[in-house]
Length: 408
Image (cartoon, rainbow, N blue to C red; front, side, top):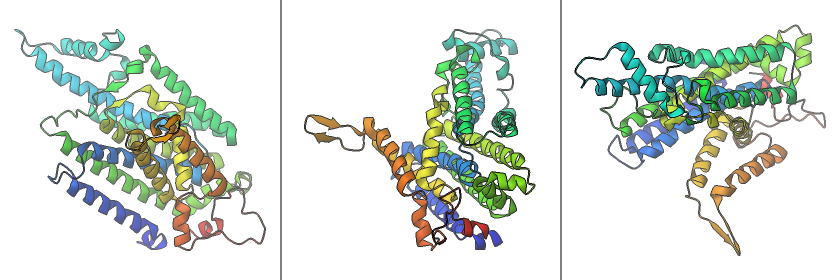
């Protein structure tokens, strides 16, 4: 309860999230009202997952000062891990039903060979790769949703932080990691169907008797629950001594190291933790999207993630959520053909083509003129203003309310 008293934004956020979930549920097709279509429920569920990875990005960048341009790789890996089970189990059901009509019952090896042919025939293979050895087990793949992003983040983070790589050089390394992973996944012999990716993920094994309207609503609830728990956990993490230390690392890493704190250990912990959160968000996102492919891990996706957090307001958890939700929904509106084209004499402005330009200009404008982002508006309403240093600099992070944060 002390956490709720200390941070009034926490009960407000959770209350608004609960009200939002209730409203969407009552207006959904599954509830009978039909005011919100099933496709839009999926869009809202995916948006909540993007808000969750934005929270992770805010922890690693807004609070710890590590501008990671590779966190969407962990998001994609989480999707691949759960996608392997979804695709394997679904294909197994189809294969068993097909082979059951034969004169003799199929052997386990025949079933596995048929599954492998069904899944990998598109890339000219008929054998099940070794990395699919656990694909038939849901608990194993759920464990891999956590372990694979955590392992990659731990190895990369240990090497980078141990070498004390910081700033733009670290950002470039995270981007290089993402690019290398995406290029590997594009290869047909990666064991993950190359450019085809994993598809049909919206067909959840065991739920075939339920319509997509109900399944999409369940995933929407799961995404909202994950976001609520993630926000609560992130707020608890940054509210105590740990939060003070990582903010100090963000503002003056050398001084924190001089004071005797294991800076590399703190940075590695945050990097791995946020990678796990990103993986969990991806595991919820891609069954709603229906497909995951290497293009999802392209470096541009991680850059978009940083843009969302910057527009929402880094260093504020609610800012990251606002930024991700705002950009995601506005992007859906523009790229979905809902925005009217604008005739300009001999040229017609198609928002589908120009939306990314508008997004880039928004990022530049926020960086130059509103470093606290959309979340800064809520700071003003709450009376949280930058301390008056009478001309003295605010410190390395101009967007930080450092005196207010020191009381946390």
